[in-house]
Length: 275
Image (cartoon, rainbow, N blue to C red; front, side):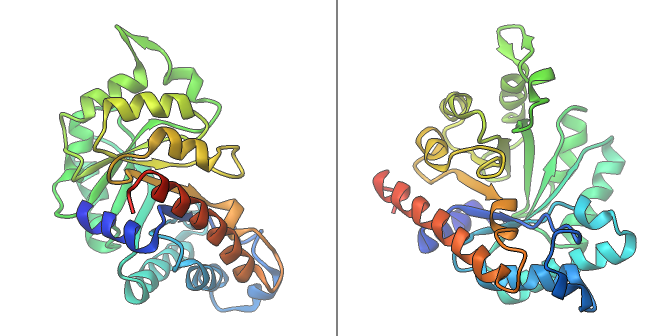
């Protein structure tokens, strides 16, 4: 999916919602445990109920890898289900890969050619040659970690590097590796003022924004500081949507929460004149 197609979906659905499929078998409703593949069954029902409000899904691969081959099969089935039934939806593998060139090249093939996701989160610490192998795929995206929403982001990301903080240097340097047609950045919702500064630095890039909801980020504040003329945001909510209920109504409750966020997003897009 290219940038134009993504923006068209945002306008059509009046939403920039990304639903995180961080599916923990210990948190899904008990009645699903009798299914052949409880994780996939949970995901399937969540997807069917929230797809009208979401433009992206983001499975975090750790929640699948923990169960070995069986978990990876659940992940594959989830991605295949989205692509077969909701081909307009952007799929992000949240795997935070990044290594020396040959290793990165194989990671890229695994996610882009085998799993066929649209985007992959990548760690920038090892530099350009660890990121470049992910950039050689048409209409596929690197989502580079820049300013994350966890408390530990203070440990390194705010260190001064010359006249900039480290996360600002990562952003500035990474823009020389790829344009806004191939690269996005992770910018946490718990740093709204920094989000505004980053938007000034990078007016045309999309940001994947985690941290709304359970981690304390506020959607309207994120939109205030982060929206661009082409929206430029994918705001992720995971726990607040997929675990809205642990009963038989879990998918309906997930839809309600997704709809609430979509309505707020519609308001902000209209207020900005984007739709």
